[in-house]
Structures are given as structure tokens and as C-alpha cells.
Image 1 (cartoon, helix red, strand yellow):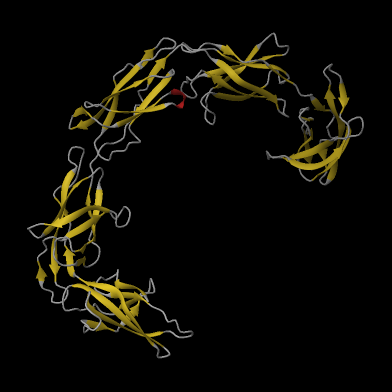
Image 2 (cartoon, rainbow, N blue to C red; image 1 turned 180 degrees about the vertical axis):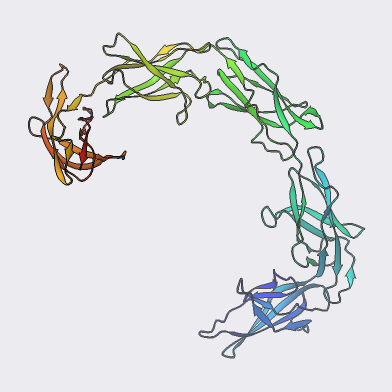
Amino acid sequence: MYSVGNAWSDHWKLSLSVYSETAGAAVAGITAHFRAHGASAETPDAATTSEFVTDPTYGNRVSAQRVVLPAMGVYDVSVDVTDTTGNVEHFADAGRFTYAARVSVGKLASDRSSVDYEHRSYTVSAPVTVTDPGTGAPLDPAGVSVALTDPNGSPYDTVAVASARADGRVAAPVTVTRGITYRTASADGTATAGYPYFLSGSDQVPLTVPAKAETTRIRMLSGSNINVPRGGHTTIKGVLERRVGSTWVGTPGQKIYALQPAYFSATVTTTANGTFSVTSGPAGAYYFCNYWDYDPFLLSTDSTRTPVYVHIPTTSRVTPFHVSEDEYGEAVIDGHLDLHGSEFANNTHSMTIQYSSNGRSWHTVGTTRIGRQGLSGDEFRTYATYGGQANGYWRAYFPGTPDYSPSYSTAVKVYRTPTRVTGGKPGHTTVRKNTYVGLGGHVQQRSTSGRWSGVSRTYAYLEFRPAGSKTWHYVSRVKTDSKGTYHLRGKATRSGTWVVVWFTTDSRHIDSNGPETYVRVK
């Protein structure tokens, strides 16, 4: 026997949990005895109840009807439990039951239909009636209080407590920082009412007091471009304003987030007239917003369209800088532009890529954007060839801006052995269906002296692309002999293009392929 007391679902019913300790037996009957709290065990029962039902949700037993007692107050409860074997066990003073007045709350109301930046306080009220649980006679509500909660928030999270007034309404003054929805959550205890009471009935219909948000703007008071000597700083000033009618007025006490170069940010609070100031750090673009300190009475805003550019002469460096050559014979270039903590907007400046066959005479291959989509703000990445090859020296050159000095990267040499597929042409370009097409030749590599020699014991592949298609299909493969010679054949089932290809299996050679030949099937 445990948890004997008022039921949560209906405070005027008795709830208890009970089970039989006799093996194989079940609870067959329950009788609860009520007597005034503190009275002796010999005191006659104030009431008894023997009809209980099982709560379908929690499995505890609840009295089938509301308990009726002679007077409001607290009662000690003793319980007799009979099991299916006929055994009766008595549980003296198993719990307490509060026989309380019923508090009913009418429709919630507010003395304001909405709240805004300048009007955040209002009163929530509702009519309240209190009745005797036995006779139904009205009681004086003086001293009764009702909790108000936000049904959109945590359950039973009290927002305010409404107390009974002389006009028969419960009321609570509220000052909010956001629009809020109320419902009556509970009313229990004695407070100053002089009797116990509980809230009766279902949840109150919610009352919403909406918050009206005002349009805001950030206006920069400093120029859009500020020149600062090397090693120096400047103060960037602005003002957060809200629109009242046709007038813009400063908004005090609001947090402004300064988004500064090199991912450095700062938070400042607006002054009494709405102004704010930030001491500059590195060179670059400065943006301001009030997004993250959300105030429901103010719409968010930012200065994205009017950033402030701080110009400080800064030395640039292209480092780190990496170049490799892939199996297709292309230079794979990746690097970063170091501005010593400064930065410029992504994808607004370019890096020049240069090539040299001997490390002395340089040729411009092209440019690539710094900080384009998918890269960090200071990174550049590209593929390049010069004259159809990548073997040689590569470097990056930043031409500079009025704020950043020009700079070169180190020169990086890359080399992969060139290869080629000779032959690779079928003997006939028109054949009958299901006859075989034969192709032969050599897979060769070129030394640094320019001499070509066979690539032995490596696979050459035959591929086919049907007429009208863009996809190549594997047909067969064969290993070359000691001189790099190959002989391949494939069945011609339809018209299309044939080619012999070779794929490197290491990081020292370049892939190659023979000529593409169209063969018509008749």
C-alpha cells in the first residue's frame, strides 16, 4: 500500500496504489476510512468509500465517485484490503486526503490587447468563484491565488500568480520580454483564504497577448572607407534606430554584434541615444547586426549592404603553397594568401598562376579566385597546364591592392613521366555484325632525354562507345610484352567508336590513350 492521497486527475477523488502480498492472490476489495487529521484511532469514521476503479494510464486505483466529507480540511486515511483468498489486511494511517473548496476560473482577459517596445506591462485577470465541495454554497474568494503558466513553455512553469481582488476576479500584473500565452495551471493550498482549495475543471482556454515588433535599422556614422596608418587603429561608430511612425529614434540598451575581419567579433551595447562604437582590429570589412540578442519588440537588422572598410597597409605572403601533378598530366595547385590577420571579402580578389620550364623564364597561365565557394576565405585552388603539360615549375603571384603588397609564392617543380599509346587503329572501319575488331600497337614512356621505350608487363584496355552515346564501356584488356606490345580485339555488335587506353598504377606516370576510331557495323 502506497501513494494514498488526492488524485491528480480529480482532486476530490481518493487515489492509492495497492497489491496483494499473498502468492497467487489478487486484490478483491478496498475500503477507505476517513477521520479528521490527528484524531485518535477510536474516533468514528467521518466517511468511508469502497468503490474503486483502475486508472487506465497509471494503473493506480481511484475512487469511483468524489469523496463527500462533513467539513473541509485534512483527513487521515486508513485502508482495509481484501484479497481473493479472503485475507483482510488493515493499513492504519496510510495517507492523507485534503477535502478542499472548488475554485473555478472564468475567461482570462488582459487590459492590453498587445505589447510593444514602450508598453511591456499589463494585467491578466479572470472571474473566479469558490464553492463548498459538499453543499455547493459560494465562499468568499479573498486570499485565493491562481498560477498562470505558458502552455508553449515547460509544463507547470509558472509565469505569474493571480490573486483574488475585491471585485471577485483573480489578477496578476505582468511585465514581459516577449509575447506570451497564458492558461491557469493550478490553485491549491490555503494561502490567506482560511480553507484549502483546488482548481476545478479542465484547462483554461489560452489567452495570448501578442508582441508587436518595430522596424529597426543600423546607420553607420563613420565613413564607408577609413584609412588607417600601419600599426594604427580607428573607432567605427554607428547607431541602432527604431521607427516610430515616420520618425527614427535611437534605441538604447541593445546588444550589437560586430563581425570583423579574420573571424574576430565583438559585442557592444547601445548607449542612451542608441549609438555604439567599436575599435578596429585588422584591415577589411566590418559588419554590424542585432540578430543574436533577439528582442521580440524589435525586428532584426544588419549593415550588410553598408559595410565599413578599414584600410591598413599590410604585407602579404603566399604561404603555404602546394603543387602536385595528377595522372592526367595536370598541375593540382592549392595555396593560401596570408595577410597577417587581415582579410577581404571572399571571391573578390584573384591569384595569378605562372609556369616555367626551367625555373627562370615565367609565363602567365591564368588567374583563380581567392576564397571562392567551397574554400576558406584566404584559399585558392585550381588545375592548370601550359602547352598541354604540367611538367616544370609553378608559382603563384598576388598582384597586390592599395591595402596589400604584391607577393610571390615559392616555385615548386613537378614531374611525371609522359606516356603514349601507339597504333590502336582497327584494320577496317566497316565490318559485319558480330565480327571481331582487332587493334595492336605499343604502350611507351618517354625518358628525360626524349627517348621512347616500351612499358612492359602492364595492362592495355580496349573501350567502346556506342553511336549516339557519351559513355565508354570496358571491352577487354591484355598485358603488354617485354617491349610494350599489345594486341586487343572486341566483337562489333553495333556501330561506335573504339579506343585503346592505358592507366598508370603509380604516381610517376601519366595516363594516355590511342586514337579514337569510328567503326560502322552493317
